[in-house]
Structure formats: C-alpha cells, structure tokens
Image 1 (cartoon, helix red, strand yellow):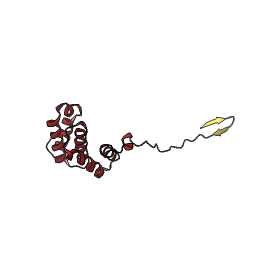
Image 2 (cartoon, one colour):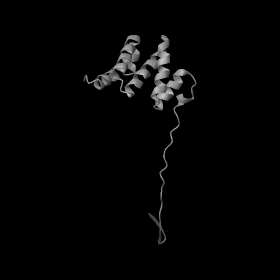
Image 3 (cartoon, helix red, strand yellow):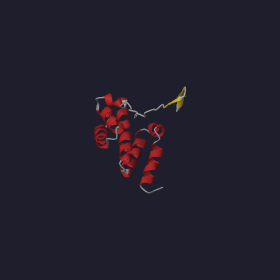
Image 4 (cartoon, helix red, strand yellow):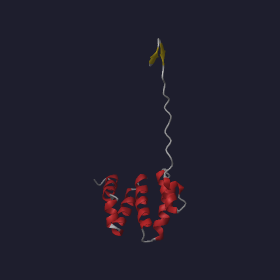
Length: 118
C-alpha cells in the first residue's frame, strides 16, 4: 500500500498464467517431428507410434538413432523399464558416441532402478 497525500492507494497485481509457446517441433509435418511434438506434449501413445514407425524402417541414419532414443524415453515415461533398457542397449550397439553423449548410461541406470535392480 502506498499513500498519496493523506489517502491510501492500494496497488494490486493480478497474476495471469504464463502461456508457453508450443515446442518448435510441433510445426514439423514429418513423422519424426510429429512424434517428437507428441512426446513433448506428453501424448505418449502418438509419440510411441511415430518413433516405432521410424525405428521399424531399420535405416542406419541419425533420425533412426534419435527415434530409438526417444522411443526409449517414451517407454520410461510409461514405466516400461525392460523395453526402455533394451532400446538403450541397442543404441550402445549402434553408436557408442551417441550413447555416451546423450547420457544413455544414466538412463539405463534409471531403468535398472525401475526394475528393482539397483
């Protein structure tokens, strides 16, 4: 409260909810972009379907590697620890540098905890 002369002036601030912009990937129209958007928006069924489609193609490229990683993360979000572990181990076999850079060892440890194998 502040005063002006002899009369008190009450200053009120109304808190408005912050509205975040959708992730930039949500503007993409390709399968990977749509799946990543779904993952970021916590629509895990749609994310899983998109990532599985890409992984199922069996291409040996960066998109498939990233889709495998996010499929593992999706499985973790759903509590599917064994499936996530298997995907992380697959990443290790495909590209050890990616596995290390993207902290897959940490994620594999989290899966082990989820499975009760600490």
